[in-house]
Image (cartoon, rainbow, N blue to C red; front, side):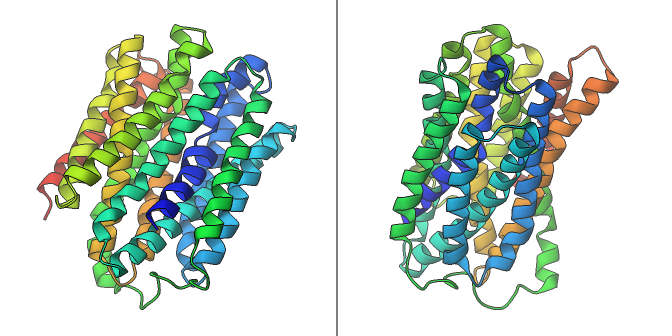
Length: 372
């Protein structure tokens, strides 16, 4: 189940969810999209991710079936931008990719963590989250090495990669396990209320990481207009994510999940603050390492903590946290757009949004560390 989790998250999150980030500068170069439409495509994906998170809990009785459907949907929504023309259709595909990737994250987490716990291998659960970083790194490397190709061809190549991973996952999923690991009674409402602070912290994490995750390649392109240079930021982001999760899974498997999450969120705050100081390439590269090296640790630790708190049925809490995360990442680009229109300070909108995100991440990291 570890391999199933790694591959499914690599396909859904690393490729389907985040393919647009490294491809956006190339699509702008090709003239197939403009900056405003790019923002709309990103917002559509975030809205789809929110809807997917809100509806994932309802899929608890059909986990394996829905997981297969969602993975196939990821493949289609990744490959179709290569042949579908029109800004509205492209936005609709990014919306669908958001819905499907949220379903995969919640359901694959529930299924794989439950199966590993059932076989007494719960500590191996952290390893499945290396899949997101691996997928991001593969996506970044493909778009980096193929940066001189037209963007539509890269969409097709990434869709083919997603199809290979999906075929592997579907074959390896347990047959007839539709209620596996996520059945049982719902968590009492009094206990659910106790987790509201964690949901808020997870939503703040979504807001804080999305600003650098969305705009780092574009900021790097502003420094060097060479895809073999600015394109490196995304592979670095993904490699840092995969390596950091593997290190934590190996060295800190018994550490309290809340403390691991707090440290990750604090380091992310530092990485988010770097572009506030300077947009030099060294700063953007270090920001990619610090944010990329912690965002999946925070994801892993947060979702593992949810399972610890509600072991009999974690799916509703996982869905709430993922919904808050999705709402936070919708707020990030919207804040950049509002700040860009208002011009409230001498800072550019991305820099000011990064400063706000860094402060919120630092505050919630402190709360997580001190919380009982």
